[in-house]
Image 1 (cartoon, each protein chain N blue to C red):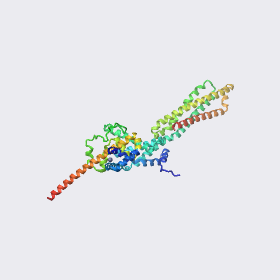
Image 2: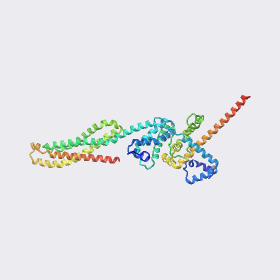
Image 3: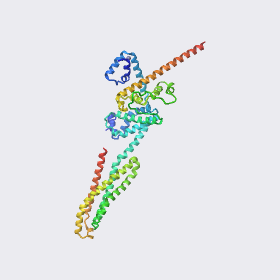
Image 4: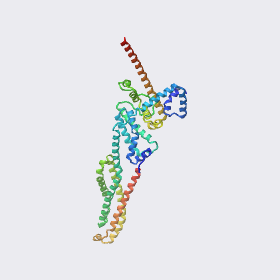
Length: 232
Length: 215
Ligand SMILES: [Zn+2]
């Protein structure tokens, strides 16, 4: 290799980044060529001068970064806290839904007219969902300020999450009501309608209420679990 | 149980788990390098500080996504280079100058930018010496040469790391570094010859003055 070729590769030689064969060839050439050695010395000098251009951090930058990161950390903590918050919201929503369902069911059972049964029954899930929504808004409203950007989507998410679960639960409950009340109604028709219903044992209703609760909590739990999985 | 903050791997894992102290250690480790990338690429301490903050915010946000497929430093420098590119793009746009990033270009890319300033760079830096003079020349390097030079000489990255951070080939790293250095050496040599000539001129004037005075 001649000097011109060698000089093309002096930069990588200086950084010890040339291929081993090339690195050795250059080293051999340099031992015999003072001109190229001079070139390398100039490159080395430049490199040192450039490295010396590195400046220390300005005063206050570290503190500014620390403040900024602390703020960021605080912002990130709120979304992480929301699952717990959501759980509480779902609990409230499902309890409300259950109460409504059970009240409705009790009302239905005490009502002697069997033909009217489907109408109030159908309106129940809507009521439950409405209740859940208003609950959700009440729960999330103060939090919205802290969450900032996330707030809007969070509350929307929660209400969207709450609505299908409630109506699902309501559907399931409706089905079970259909069967249990079918029997209850059959029993009713055998009995004399009227004052008799007041004397009936409350146990079936308590059972029904417990079932409703259980079903809804299960659905909520499943929903939360699925959300947790999709996050990972 | 005390935490071991010495190993970077541990620091990263702790920081990913939300350990603020570990993240602070990571910042301390790389802060100066990132700030200096900003300083040399953007040309002023204010923008450099803003960029440094943006880089750390990005790293903080995306640290959970860092899987360790590449070295942490490579990942971090790539974020810094991208951030720097965004700042430069904005700065070029406000000055209504074209900016094409740091990517691969044709062979004819110029090492030095064509100065648009009315006062030529030579005039600006002629009377300066040493460090200031060198800073002036580095500032005039085209961004795609400057970034490679800064990552090598100031941050001490390997060619492989530079290639990954700037997203260019290893060959491009080699040739850009070689060309940037050769251009800077040329400037330094020319400047030295100029000042040597000026000095000898001054010397001869002095001598003439002295001999005049003696007469
Ligand atoms: Zn030679």
